[in-house]
Length: 71
Image (cartoon, rainbow, N blue to C red; front, side, top):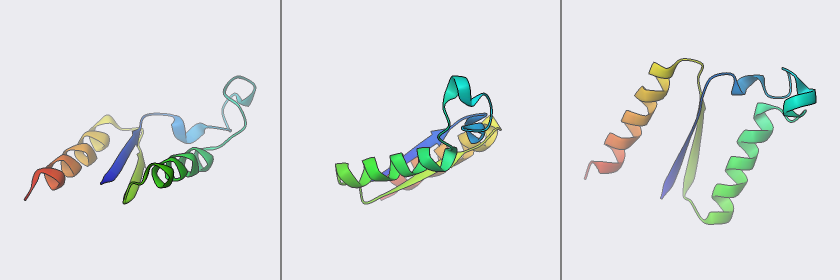
């Protein structure tokens, strides 16, 4: 099974914007955490997607839903 993680607006600013509040880890660290968790849980793969535009996130979600139900 593959996993899809969709991150929304402004998560690309992790570690940049207000690190005193949100911490100094950046977005790449978050992606690595997701990849490590997927490996640990036995997923066949993971796609981590981030967009500041809701429409792009919906398009990616729909594409993955259609791909997972096609058989």
